[in-house]
Length: 385
Image (cartoon, rainbow, N blue to C red):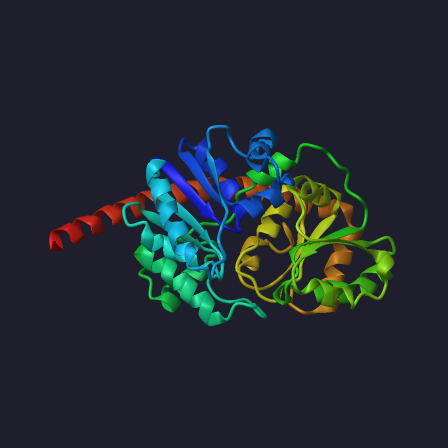
């Protein structure tokens, strides 16, 4: 079976999935946004070659870099129509779309792929707090993808009923598969960097729903108990500047602005004693899974699916969202107890390994089910003619 993985912004998820499928005997071809791949490898001249040199992909996994038109440009239709032809020429037998909010043409791609079974992972079933995409746009994008897909995957157990009810999707076309891949992080983990005492990392997009401001507000409380604590922020997004204005002690922060390459990402996670996810809302979190991959415990808000992925007191500590005192207390607890922190980190790494097997087995079952549904619908369509 040859699987075509399509993604604009979920590069880490796509690379992880490709590696796991390849290890389980599937052939894989990837169709990925060129800008996000360039950010990942840190090389604008030879991005695909770097994927193979670093070992992020097996040599026999072809990659097509997509130079996408603007989403509002009508030429996008022609682009995606041509992409369908490319997939058919590549011999793709099933397409897996990793869909984020606002990626309307990727949602429509599911309907254009009439001759190939389609599985779509809906990354964000409902709009997050403060999202610049209206909730109606998130709904429409997801609905279009669902209509064109044979099977739909969600990465949170509590999202199954939500998607079933919100989008009118029958439960037999919906599957829960935990987000637990870690191949990408492991590939970048080729240079051992020692953990630095007192380092706390916030990583990813700076958006209002990610709650960065609450970590910044917690810093004085953290520093009061752990004087050597340093907050590492590696972020991109529209909320970073606002949050930076709230900093009262710049000497306690180390800030990296913008997208960073995978090797730099690996350095930051290794340096960090723990990772903080002070989110106000969330679906799932690739940052959390990456933290686990590096054997780092997390302090995370009890929102969305995070409480499903964090075994409170075992792989991390859960706190109430927007509660600065509770957030600071949890961070201090882990910074002051090396034995507890390292034990949680080891538990987190073991969790990844255990869930990884289940995730890829479930994904392959979803593919088989999608193929069966597609063939059944194709037969019904022919019968009507």
